[in-house]
Amino acid sequence: MSFAQELRVMSHKSIDSYGKGIPYLEDKSVKGRLIVIEGPDASGRSTQITMLTSRLEADGHAVLNTGLRRSELISQGILEAKRNLVLGKRTISLFYAADFADQLENKIIPALRSGYIVLADRYIYTLMARDAVRGISITWSHNLFGFAMKPHLVFYLDVDPNELVHRVFQKNLSLDYYESGADLGLSDNMLKSFLIYQGLLAKQFRKMQRKYGLVPINGDRSIVEINKDLQKKIEDFLRISLRAPA
Image 1 (spheres, rainbow, N blue to C red):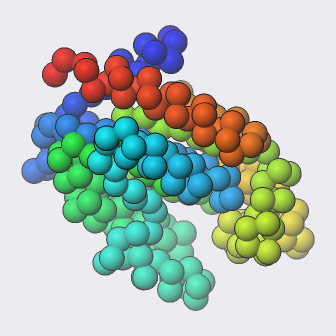
Image 2 (cartoon, helix red, strand yellow):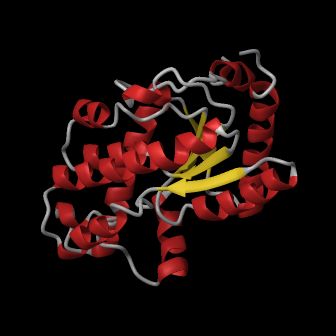
């Protein structure tokens, strides 16, 4: 199936969930479109979303940005739990699920019903990939996030771990404990642990591509090259999607 054909398949105008959705929102229609940018830490997601937002707004679209751990109710709790290292991996997943559910119900879906283009900086796929690497069943994660709305379009910025580590040091000057998989005991060396962990995450994303319709994007290129690629695909999608009959 070509990318243009895939776009027609993804042009659904109702709230379609992976499992049992939020009851009172099931079968509601949306005028907007949900577009997700996935990828590892320092892959350039935030930069791309900023550039895409500017372009979409210049083209006359109302745009809302969202992402993981942005719920006003839950996000601070997640930060504290990760900082103190006191909660188990399933409990952390439940925290993230609550954060996501709050945003979905009170931020994402209302914006979509009002006709916004919602750009999500990561979605449930990162959470499921993290869970899988930590030994949690994909089936358990899929069921946990079954209430999630299926996005209209999902891109995955695929960056080689060796390239990624250079970008991380440019961005943060140090490696993050969880983004390096240090909690998994992969290696006594943080750099080696980071490379192993990011390779394991990438493997999970490749497994999810077909099942969840992720569109891989070569993230080893320059910011401008990646942005041109994303802009072209999104413009093609919106041209087909927004004119599709109900």
